[in-house]
Length: 517
Image (tube, rainbow, N blue to C red):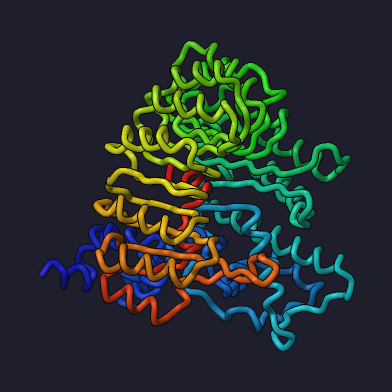
């Protein structure tokens, strides 16, 4: 009875609670649209929250947006001789009003792909042959879309600004930021704010300097906006922007997550004062940053606990400073990544992790070799109650003790016989998601070993394998994804193992930094 009421629309609140669980399952949401009017009305907003990030080759949704332009905005397309009759004749919903997530890079990329996908017979405009006109047209479309979102007073929750000075997208961004400066209510509800600015500041680029100035001005003028920001992601940013953003008190009572991604802390000062001002900060994440000695020396002077949750370390750091940092944040650290450099520093670092960090859930040991076997095994054993995600780049044989893992990634360059011993010694370990990258060149024997020791014993639920094939010059000529081998996939399915594409199952740095926190 309850089920029939859900389908008939008698329980709209409960129906919505069910449909929103399919938020990122776009094929299921498309099916929901076809059930009835209520289901369609509930599913459409979820599909249009972030259409620019949907992995698809169909960018026609931009035309649906253009169809919602008012007469004043639409008139700006006249010089390109756009034929209104070729745009969608009518739309059932006000699609621009549903947008919740905007990433400037994704918008510019989608516009570019949409333009490239237009066939000659469907072109809505006449362009000059020079590339400048094409850039001007794409810039116009991006400006119209932002004006459309502003006009609809959208309730934007996530806003991400990306600046990469070797791409033409920066040609558009300066004017977009100026438009936002004139309409600051556009981002009045944002809770997640990301700045990704990958530029070469040694180059005297007037456009990049202008963009940086506009970002700093936007931050400085956004006192009420930043009071609502919950999460900030900072990537490659310059000191002036950092100063504008974090040295103010605007988000002291709202910010609970800070993510530093490829930040150079060399010229950044007053970090202890910065972290003193945050009253509700729950986690800090550091991913492959630079000048960490300067960072740690400032942080350890702070009187407040330093809640370092993620630490992805790719440079040398003084052991004395590292120990003080781990002492200050050891109870909070859950995600740890390290690139082995093969010196005494490696040994000392692992010993400190083993001593202070008891709550590691995500462990990634890259460029690992067997001289640290005993210490790494002690580390895994000590973490076994909490550890969920384990990645080991294996060049030589290792033997982890049995445990249950949510995720294991193995990057293999070992003999098949050694790998078989590895699997037999860990035969009681169940792995929900197993990802293997095999660069040994022994595809057939390695696959047979996996079938015998993993498939037939049903030790995994999801599996992805990428095999490197070498040519006569001992260089990789191609990669074979198990997912592309139809008969092999069916054989694994017989044992209730789901084979996925390697790129889909591989757990990336961005997954943990920007999506899973």
